Length: 269
Image (cartoon, rainbow, N blue to C red; front, top):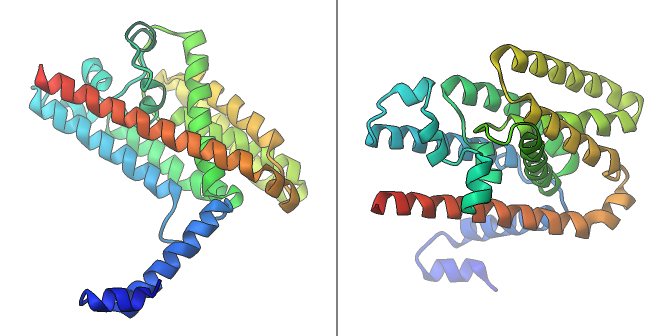
């Protein structure tokens, strides 16, 4: 299709829009190959935006329901439950399956989200550049699930929020993956192991969900141990990871859709 003529006929700058469409097509083809997008678009940034948006939604709900500004630093359990916290009795007894993913985007206060987003901003781009956005998002989603599954075995009655399970998934993945690379990856592996040690100790001090941390780290390490290193191996595994990425995207979107529907039910009642 002659995009320049099409947009010229609409009274727009056809040349500019033609170049935009060509760039979008290149990015789409790169995404399908599991490669990175342009420097201005990244899954890491999108994850940070979604986490921040859900935190703002929690603050707004707190203001509307009488919690005031206390939600900024120490939101009530009821408020966290409203915006997607993991609580296994709600999942099992009420069928609120979306909590298995939305909890990883929900945070218990400003310090909580700030610490996790700083860690994601520091660790995420390294992993995303190495394995590509599709595999990266798959890794983030799957390790959020392994984190909450171990939490179910450890403390099924405890409400849980936070991206730290998935963050430990990135750390566990990096430790296993870069260890397989050899000398060139040892430095990065050691950095990730120090991150893990610091975060585990910090978790014990502040009473964080170390069960979720361990579950995420185990899930990430398993993926890091089997993800193909070479170009040929990645080409062979590409259909599988494209499918897993699509499934992760559908599951995440469906989870947020179900969460929003639960909000509508709450506001109507």
